[in-house]
View: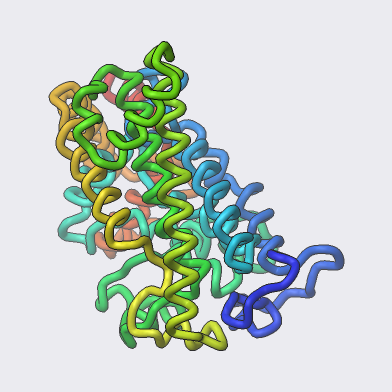
Length: 376
């Protein structure tokens, strides 16, 4: 049930808002452990193994998928939780479920589906992650969704517009009241960015889309490169990159722990409600390390995510999702009965949302196969 001795401001299931549907407590597990287990056993979790992080699934076997990314995020999150005496099981649950709403083909897929849904309320993967755990998972006799604890759902919903927040009930209130989530949710959000920033360096270098000299211009990478190269001058590039990334992650995570601890000491929260009313996030990096972290993110956005080779693949996969959306909107019976039977033929907006649910749940390879099956 988390760290052995939790801080007074950590999430505590005995003071939780609880679940949407009341359930008998488990005999040998805490409630956040139970959430983590439900997430791991869900269909959405298994689908992550064939969903893209940066590279489309068939581009290579060793590139990260949403599943491996989520496990890496959870590993970093648990480290931070234990160091700060926060609720380890809760952070792990949030980290493992945070990408449930991602479409196939990564952000390219989300952009395409959002464009398709422009006249029907749009599509946003963060909202979809909450929709998956609240509604779309069908595993229990007495309710739809996974019926997760409030704090887990709060952490999954990292950001939200006021319009959408007003429709989400309890979990949307903090966006209307301009409050922060608990520290566990704040940590999960930051370690997600730490994981993909550093590991996209690995995947981008492996793919040959970004080079060593380019990376050395980034302060976070360059400092570690020089230290590693000086100590191990004969190291081959592959092991050099691994050693640098390992040190980069350690640098940023250590800074996050130290700075968050300092922020907590200064603000002195006594409860999770104090954390929520702090006016700003208490989990953060120092200004210096955060600037380096953001600099690396901007570098990857320019030189990896917008690389001409990636843009060519982006156009192809976006065309696939747009074709599928149009096909299903025209003929709902081309979807499985589970989805076609949920469509209200008199309400185009709700019908479009069902189509979006179906497409968002696809894996990369299923979307490609389905497109080929229907169109040829």
